[in-house]
Length: 91
Image (cartoon, rainbow, N blue to C red; front, side):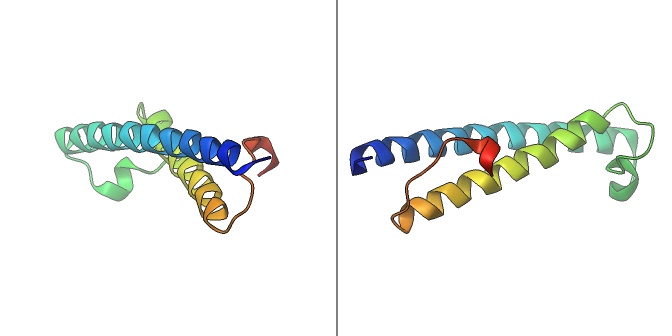
């Protein structure tokens, strides 16, 4: 693979990273509005083992953060001169 192809992969990685960041920001804002409106404490609201209508959103925030970590790892690898693999299933 030449450097140009790897640079294009970095661009794809960073586009995905910032799209996730925007989604996560919106999701966290929505969750906090819901929590405050319900008058619940943070620990109680974000406890995913309880019976809650927002548990899927809380789990989604965790998944988004994990994906952001993976993408940042790919960008860091690029900075070290490594080839970016877009096959996320191998991570």
